[in-house]
Length: 310
Image (cartoon, rainbow, N blue to C red; front, side, top):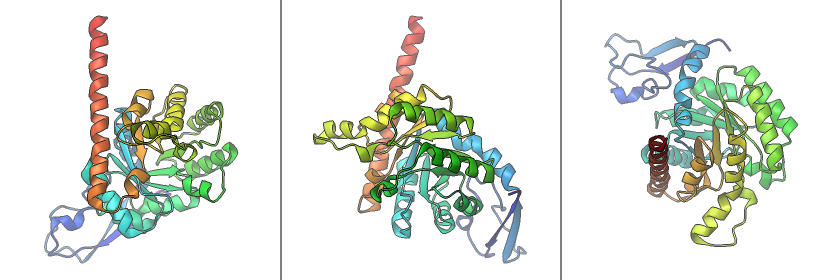
């Protein structure tokens, strides 16, 4: 895929807010911010997709490199536009750095009309990613397998490697994240992560919330639920050089633990997307974002203290 044509209708009387997609800092300024009166109703802008993705990858990964990424996940099989819009809005207003939605071009266009955050799309079908990337997605995720586990479907390392190779072959410049299944033993999760790194994956995502059934309520229960994904993040982050995103079963209580364990960011899904209204979603995202900021500040203080002692 060398290039694509992005065509959008433009009204001469439209305000600048009509060009939200074009002003996304990750997509680049594709159209002038102040269209002149002679601008035709339809403008077709030719974009070199490969160059655009290459230039945006560093920006998309910046929060991972700074170990403060917060990705809010609407769900791989969630095609409810109203719910997805609420999740995207909550991510944008609550202080997240990325948003992850189902791999659907229409949902991508909906999302980039609501936020300037990088949009990630999740799927287990490599052929589906290209259309979503054409629509504006800047990151793709092979993963978020929870809905498949509920149907009794489990992915083997061989299957995941095959999906990864096909996706990277189709989209060599896209930011690619792959989830390592919690159904594997920890040593096998580490082994798969190392192989994925060799295949050119940019981010490894962990999981584990579905396999954890807390025996306690409250804070103890939240920590119990996060234990499998925290263990995976700890183990994998010490075996690979690429960023690790700790996901599944996390909350404002356990998100900072993920960073301490070695993760470069956290992914949060059901703690946000299962809430009933956007106000509650924003509050939850903000709570998690604030907990990560506090964790980062604590780590900076610790690093400074150690440097002083040396």
